[in-house]
Length: 332
Image 1 (cartoon, rainbow, N blue to C red):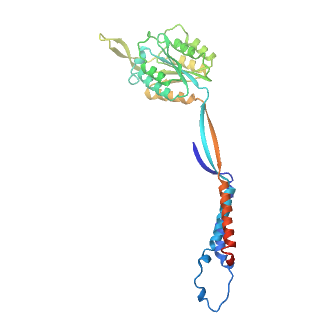
Image 2: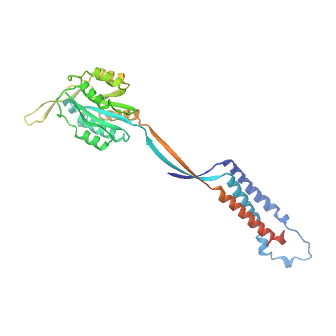
Image 3: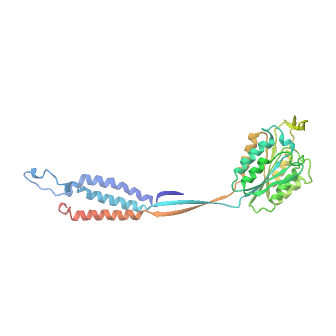
């Protein structure tokens, strides 16, 4: 809420330049306002009376009255502005997250999955007006959290995601299909899936292209992210006798052709995240691309201030007239 003084007719303010001109004119010619009398000696009139000294106040009252009228012509008023925002029907977003064993690769720090969880949590915090759901997939898929506006639930779900919850593998078609299923009944104006994977579709009974056609038919935009460095990375390959994962260098393989196809067919965009910084910048870009429309309403309350100025000018003129025709009548 703001409170400001404004002038409706600011052009009249230029008339205030007349005030110093009128004051200067009075200074040089006010002596002509008094009658002169020639006398042989002026010793008896050396002490000027107090009333005579204060006579210029009459002109000052007039100038003040004119100034008040000029400012009143500018029509000053206080403007109290209050704002109210209204969020239109927001965006429904489903994040489909690959939780296969390869997400433990250490080309991102501390590993791909933990890096993603950090960035995804920040992304959720930046979407206060949208509903978000979480789907996880590996060899199969399931909904971790249905679409909800409760960001605390979504962020807690992301923090608890871990490897080993479901059979291993990379069923991109099933991950995408589950995300589409979450959005098929959505009434949101915009529906978005953020599909992240670090591998190649190698299992599942839903073909990725079939899932893409379903998304396209429901006007669901899919942003795809290929996660992994170029070249080789440390992947978990087995467990030792103590159950600790053993890592070895292996080539990074991501089906970028499929991910580009999914994004292009649905009006989305494909990204490649090769390190932590790039992954964060991708989610920031998606955040900028998908903006929820927010309407802002402004309410104005006007309080006119010119009336007191007119009353002040009238009062000053009245005082001047009373003084001029009573106390100073003999001086006129």
